[in-house]
Each structure stands twice: as structure tokens, then as C-alpha cells.
Length: 332
Image (cartoon, rainbow, N blue to C red; front, side, top):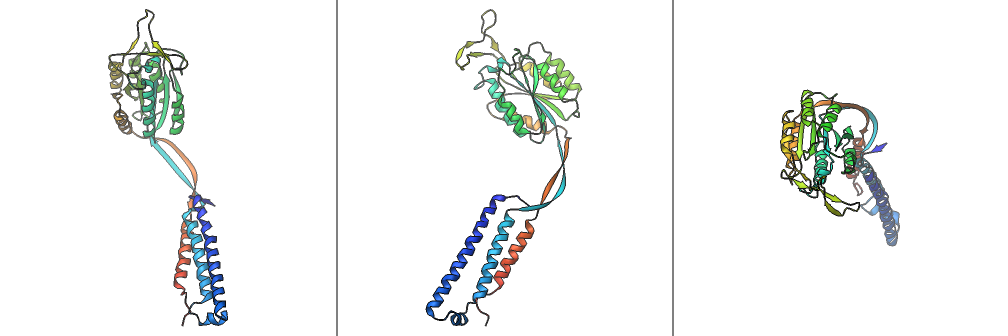
């Protein structure tokens, strides 16, 4: 036997406490009667009937036992349940290149992206979600899964050192995402880009054209300042040591390329959002994903225990009713 709320079984300790209380009460009553004379004679003269009292006490204790047992939701016997899950397939591609360390969003672009990604994953429950990390190349950080908690675990290890090859290959990330969605029905799949839009000759627009042909919508959240922001350099202990410079010694300014992100999203029928301090962009993205056509993503069978609390509840109430009907006093 299984219980839906097994912790409530601790309340069964009240039953022996109630029994002990009644035993003590009967013992005290007997001692008091002995002080006044012969207990048998006084019992006959008294309006209370000792046997009825004991029966009522037993019924009350039994009723409490079964009512608590019922509240714990006893379950036995099983039935086969068929669960079908419907939703969309969503790949989230996260830019982990050095430019995402720029601090025009606090604490920096990458940490802001991870925060938004965590909130986004939580609100996409019911859909399959996969995560791609990319810098100079792209790889699957988490394959498509219904398991939101697993996706969040992979999210925790994302940082700018995750991919040793420098640069930003948005096109590579998009092609990898399209490949992973190749078995998903058109209009039921999407790629969400979290990036500052900087790209190093990976042909993201060509990749977006390929995505459009496969029925994949691309959405993007842009992180950063279109005017540009220097990229801080820190030592192994996290101490600031200056800003990233090019070969000529000039400080590199990382700019949010909204024009590129707008082009690659619009060609697929998606939409571009700029990261803000609130969750407006996340909420709008979730609305867009929920608007995708749903497809059958999984069908699984599992055994489910049947609730049987009704029998114990009925028995407890029956004992309580009988206890109520039996008079405590002697019937004249």
C-alpha cells in the first residue's frame, strides 16, 4: 500500500493517546465510585451505563484511526495511464564570446543573458528546450529536453572560457540549431539567439535563409549598447587589469549590432528584442513561442496507483455516526 500524504500518518499517534485518556478516565471513575459504596449498586443506580461508555470510546478511537488513514490518501491497485505531451521545440543559442563580458549591462552582458535565459526556460515548460553555446564555434550545451531542471544545471557552467576558440560565429550556431530541429515539424520550432550581434564572417544571414526554408523561426534578444562598450580584462583572481586592445594598441569597442539581428529574424518571420532591465522581452518571447503550432512531442505509459481513501473515510464516518446514535445514559 502507498500513501499520497504519508506524513499525516504521524497523526495516528493521537489514537493511543485518546485510548490512554479513556482508560484513565474509567479508572478514575471506578475509584470515585468505590469511595461512595458498592460500585455495582451505584452503577445500576447511575444514569450512565459503563458498557455503553466503553463502546462509545472504542467507536470514537476507531473512527479517528480510519479518518486519519483516509487523510493520508491510501493507494493500492494500479492502472495504466497514457500521457501525450504536445508543444514546440525551442533551441536557445547563447553567445559566450569575450565581447559578452562588456559591462554596459550589469554585471555584464553574459550574466544578464544567463539571468534572462533562466527565466525564459522556466516559462517554456511543456515545450522541449535545448541550449547551444557559441563563440568562435558552436556546440550543444544541452540537447532538446523536457527536463527544465537539467537545462538549468547546464546553464550554471556557462562562462566566457567555455569555448577556447575566440570570435563570434552566429551563423555556426544557427546552422547547428537548424540541424538539431530537422526532425521537428515546420511551424513548431524556433531558435532564440541571446547575443550582442557581433559576428566574424560566419554568414549568419545565409544561415537564416536556410532556417526559413526549414520552417524555423528565429528570435533574438540583443545585449549591449549600439554606441559601443570596451571589454574589460581581468586576471585569474577577477581583478580588473585594463581593457581589451587590438594589435595596434587601440581599445576594442564592442557594439550591439541591431541591424544584423533584425535582418536575420525578419527573414524567418521572427522578431528582435533589445534586452531591458525588466522581463518585458522574456514575456513577449514566451507569447511568441506559445503561438507556434503544437505537435506531439512524446507519448509515454506509466502505472498510476488508485486512490482508495474513500473506503476508509466511509468507515470512519460510519463509526462516528454509530457512536453518536448510541446514548451515553441508561435507557429507561
